[in-house]
Length: 370
Image (cartoon, rainbow, N blue to C red; front, side):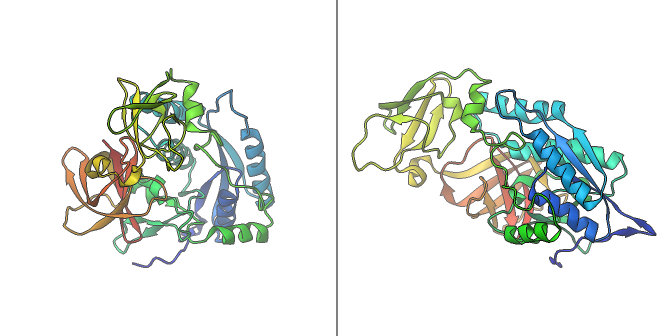
């Protein structure tokens, strides 16, 4: 399979292919639009307007203005796609509901599934787009049999394939990631070379579309949170916390441990009891064998190539963004689920998070940890 980066084909007979680019007002999506235009696509830039809570600083107007300025610089059409209702329903409400149940969801995965490659994808296709593009650091590659496959971005520090495991074949076959073949520093250089007004704009941080806000502060606005006890692994009360639902396995901050010794290291959340509103912490944390997981079940699995064939072949996986890949084996079941067996028991495996499976550089798909 040829993994060299290319944005092809650009022509359908004598007609240029239409590309709708999701424009955030940032560097990555702006360079994506410029690259597609350079390669001969008929490009339209689209700013996606998402729901924004009143208690957070509102930056969407500034971001929209930046996206519009880029489109003006490139001389391409600009549109706005209002997805406030969809974002609130499919991302925010889901996030709140999952945390309230004691699980730890991944809002960025849901944003990609339901907003960028859900509602926005449909918006673009209904308006005649042949392809939809975003500024994700990933690569979509057409195999010799016509199947589109997903690969990691060239920039290992920016690779976002982890967040894209939900894309089905019928969607990814119409998706391009123009900056996926570059490292971030080169994307910055390209922005300057194209004369884009956002070339020096800082990268956005935080929850997808919501910006720089901690999940704890966000949840406290929507879910009743009551303080409770912090327990050690023997069940003794050693401190207090703000509410069990806002903590996730492996977390080492946001709670108070009163019984400390001068040479104590960090404490890690290794268990929580939603009914009793307690969290259990351990200084061994990630190495505590009592809280390591040998295998997990996945629900809502998606295989980007269209299917997955069980085999004894060793694969790699990660169950949090930027985690070092760990060896595993995978078997599927007939209920759209899978069992993942880790070669070595893993700490802080968190229900509700995405577990994503790789074969070399290729992202095969994944599921939600049960």
